[in-house]
Length: 157
Image 1 (cartoon, rainbow, N blue to C red):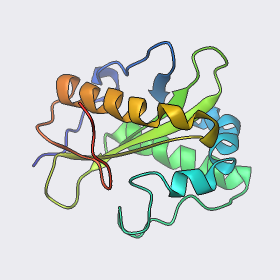
Image 2 (cartoon, rainbow, N blue to C red):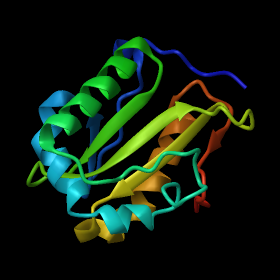
Image 3 (cartoon, rainbow, N blue to C red):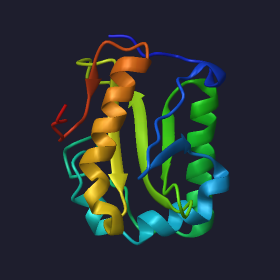
Image 4 (cartoon, one colour):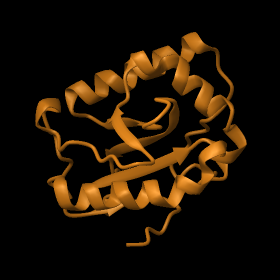
């Protein structure tokens, strides 16, 4: 299995449709990102991939101040720029509100090229399966990967 180190400028254009738009997660999204996940902690914890045991020892989400969230977004942005991991914010195409996030990481289990997790805020729970299916299709058709793993989730194709 091979992690696809891709220069940011060479990454396939992220998907969008009438209900969601993906864009690289960047510090500029801090306030909207923080509002999205802070309002949905219990919902995210119940989302496949974020339950205890689905993915390592990550205990996120947990309440944190806006300044700490900014530090996390800066870390995700540096990983993105270095090709170490790729985090995408999910935006509402009408309001530009952050409605979710997608994380594309190396799969350290050795069973796939990439490991993916996604969440949507509680107010947009109906988009959860659509987002996962859209991202899965994008990764399998546009990225240089042979296999994709979604911890705790089965993708309907």
